[in-house]
Amino acid sequence: MHAPLSHEVALCFGPLEGSSPDHFSMPRLPRFQDFPLAPRPRHQPLHRWLHGELRRAIVGGRLAPGARLPSSRDLARQQGLARATVVGVFAQLRAEGYLVTRHGSGTVVAAALPDPFIDAAPARPQRAIGPGSRASHNAPAAIATSRSRSASATAATSPASPAPAAFDIYRPSLDAFPLAIWAQLTSRRLRLGRTALLTAGDPLGYRPLRAAIAEHLAATRSVVCDVDRIAVVSGTQQAFDFILRLLLRPGDHAWMENPGYPGAARLLRRAGAHVVPIPVDAAGMVVPGGRRQPPAPAMIYVTPAHQFPLGATLSLERRLALLALARDRGTYVFEDDYDGAFRYDVRPLGALQENDRANRVIYAGSFNKLLFPGLRLGYVVLPTALVAPFAALREAVDRYTSPIEQAVLADFIAEGHFERHLRRMRNRYREGRDALFAAARRHLGTKLNLQPTEAGIHAVGFLPASADDVRVQRRAAEAGINVTALSPFYLQGPARPGLLLGFAAPSEVQIARGMETLARVLRPA
Image (cartoon, rainbow, N blue to C red; front, side, top):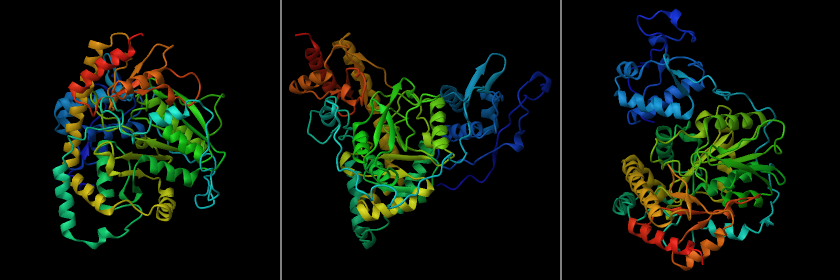
């Protein structure tokens, strides 16, 4: 992490100067000198620092429900910030449910914040972690699903087969990647001739890369971690596979979103788990509560930042409910931060892991879509109890990913190329999204109900209930465009027909032409 600033930072909350305390019914709050904030790392954006500190104060109970914050103007003056920065942070905290604005009272901490401090120990003993905890007994190599959608789901979610660029939901924009810079960094690493990069190295990964990942995640995703809890993997799929080998036993129940990522469902079934589909709505996974709950899970797989495939963001209330459930049942949550870096109309939300005080969240992400698919580098942030077992399993099964590629990526991040590339890609993908919706308005009319999207690199469009979206996908492929049917992503129950349309890889011209073609495909015969 960057060295902290040398001065202590504090906030002043409570009655404004000159006001009588009798005018306020809120809790008495600390004065300026008694309310320190953590110093800002030198290169962390101001809005991210202030947002994180205020949110931690609320979740941690230092700011009680109903407590009034100073005005944006006063807070900006106290902290030496631009007022626009404070206004933006207040707006994001209101959107997340932490703050509310009351007429005559200003901005206050929300009163309805549910179970804001998830820190109790698990209600049941944690399972032993090690060779005997799962199938060191071999889980079934493959457990076939009886669902007729299985084959379609496999085809729909495999990005390996060549396909037209128009509307591919997995393919990032490769022509914008700074290949010359990557080549220079690779050449420099090879010229250094250090034999350490030619050996196996640490099974958890190249330490400078892990340090760069820790710094990046803390600054951009509010992930709570240090270098010793991070492992470098080939991608999120490998991280999930290793975690299941460690934690899951044949016959265990596992919850995942419905619709959801079939690749995760396949790994769970191959591990011998009973997959329990949990519905999804506009606020993300509908966390079960009350008396009628599914069987207690040993694992929960969730995509809270940008639910795959529907695109919802898991609400604050449900995030806290999910963490409370994991704490109370001793369940681990695997947080797949799918498309968490690509948000366009609002700032990126923090990770689910940020609010985890019981060490039940396993956070994973990948560089493969952020940079290029052939890189095969990702990361997982582990609870402390899982670090040693994970390292032992990694050394036994896979040993390590390429040390040279890891070193090059560490340089790419440390020298600022990664952050610049992400900024360019956000702008480019925003333009692609806007072009997609403009072309849909011109060519599709009411044939496809395209849903607004603020994040990710694909949009979801719903078809009439009687439509066969798998047939539409097949006909579109015959016409030269690559759309993805929605129904195969449902694990069970009624499947809503629809199409997923990627906007990252194609140019605006390709998007327009592809939309013309799709309009012809959707035209009644």
